Length: 144
Image (cartoon, rainbow, N blue to C red; front, side, top):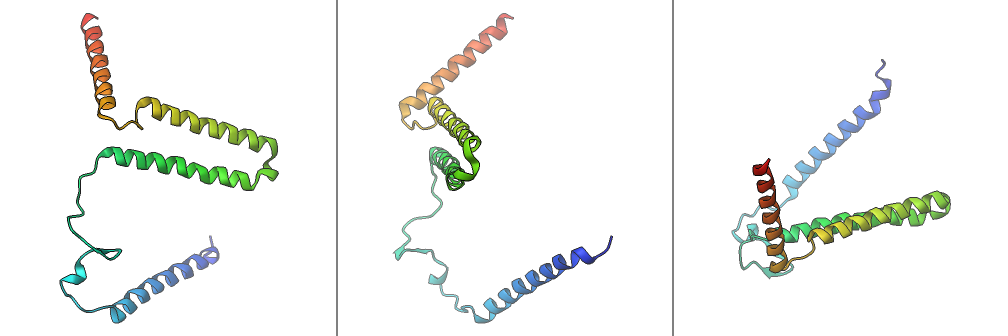
């Protein structure tokens, strides 16, 4: 094996390290040097902070955010399909139909599982259903 195919990668790696080192050196030379108390405080859109940023947030918000990211990311694929629809023809059309069907099935599944329902009544109902299912399993296990 010769080293000929590896020299561009080696040059690239050296250039990256030089660039990063240069950025660190320039920022330390040109950057601010004052250390007042106000410098370290958070400042967002001209509004001073009033409370701590470490708030407890319900997991429901994260669940909705994850579902949004998943279904929003799928639009990237549909958009790419729409751009190349003429090149893909009928096989591409049926492929995107299957893709959207899978997305719809996933959304229906999430909806039926109650992931999109935030009411306390729905949460209590799901807990009650789980308890009943567990009691039924225990009863069946004891009988056998």
